[in-house]
Image 1: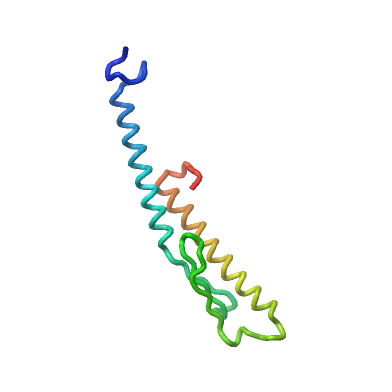
Image 2: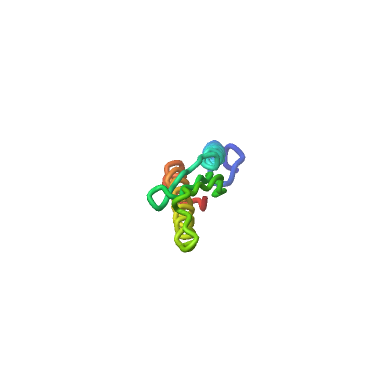
Length: 112
């Protein structure tokens, strides 16, 4: 049997070191996920007529609409402005999460 009582042909110390590294990476990923979820993103559309605030969990925190954006004869425009602001906030959350996780995992794409 191989020294260290590990798997045959593998040094037990090497396996333990790999497990410790994997556990540390898992802890770092969990910590980063918590930090990313706590971040807030604020975006706007229509030259600032509509703005939204979203957290890293993709939860909508606030919507602000300037009175001049409200035209009863053109509700569709207001809907489009709200949708554009929300979609931009979502894009920012995704991009930030992907970039930050990529830094931590070396771009290995662990599905986070």
